[in-house]
Length: 372
View 1 (spheres, rainbow, N blue to C red):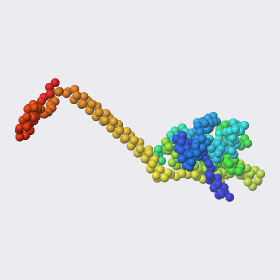
View 2: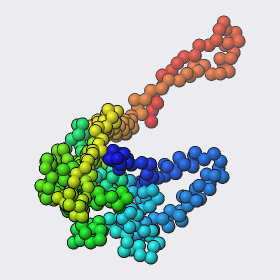
View 3: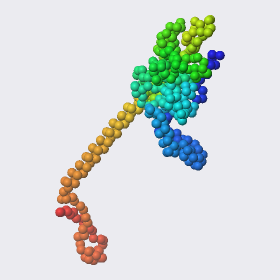
């Protein structure tokens, strides 16, 4: 019984996620959709129905009005058609009590599914990640900087208060049911799984209440084995390696049974699993090295070469202009000698001589100096 249920719990299924895309990607996707349509009439209908300026403007204004924080690229907009989790009490925005019922605990807009993040990540970022097995969003924050596969990377880990629920904290009090909150390090997932008293945590109750560890023999929480970490490339926002480890525990309430009374109010670990992306493919790693290790130097080299060529062309042009101007200013007409042919015998007499002579009268070349 346990195995099929665990497989169902960690199987994300065929969930449909709608993300907020950058404008350039959205325009490219629009062009692809329109190009796939066979007839111009259908293409015009799609363009009018889905991409009309007034429709996009109305959607943008409604989204900006409802959200205090700016919408970021690749964040979740809808999950299976809803911007929130109904099992945590999310209602439609047109509901009369939506302002009170819709809380940070049941709102998904602005969270990420963990597969892609925005570009140019800073070290102060805190991302909310949602997966079906968590039954809630989990905050991850910057931990350290380093290199992975020889490429610059940021390590993001689940925060200490990721599974916390406290009546004193407005952002997590909505996870308390009937005024009762679970100990630190435990997240209630019973609303997502048929109200079975299950809780999610890091393995061996890592980052949880020490009392949870002391209540069960054999637990030894360590960061290397039990923490949840995502290694991201900050410029691109893509995960290079991920190790998301979660544990499922049973919440016991058996005071009515004398034999099981020793386990009353004890959190019993059942299973823990790891969802991991071990490494990128060699082709992607090679492209990343080309992008970050080779391309910047090649670009810088091209800039230097083009700059030198530009300076050389300007210098050559300036020298040619100066030399030409100097030659024009130093022109001396007396040094310019031309040659022309001049008849030494007048034309009428020449005709008479040719009539009685044996040949034509030879023309002599006369060197004439052109004087000013």
